[in-house]
Length: 176
Image (tube, rainbow, N blue to C red; front, side, top):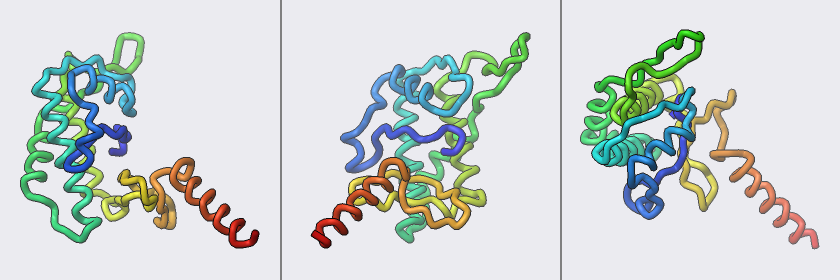
């Protein structure tokens, strides 16, 4: 998601083997790697960790469906919408003029924030620019915000560079 960034945590089907969200501390660590500033000091329950996995899997299926020419799975839309309808993280200002999060943020607040961000993305101007990385061994999803809208790689520094190196080696081996 745009505001939260993406940090792979596993997913449905074959991605389940990469699962890293097992305990409340795992979800807190994911939040720490996100783009939320400052990182909220979350109180997370085991049920909220399960909710995070459900939301993540639903988001994955909803985002991937249009890239495959399929409709959005209705049950997954329901999970996203129900999660987005809950109270999200609320920003507040400290006496020193710094940003903080109001109240005692929970995993539910975090998930509502993620779901709302997803709804904004999936219904906004970049919804048609959600892509799957073109690298054969990478399945990351990304939003192509480049001006021409022709980006192929999740990251030029990683997958794009590997592709360029392979192409260069192939050209050199054909020449030699």
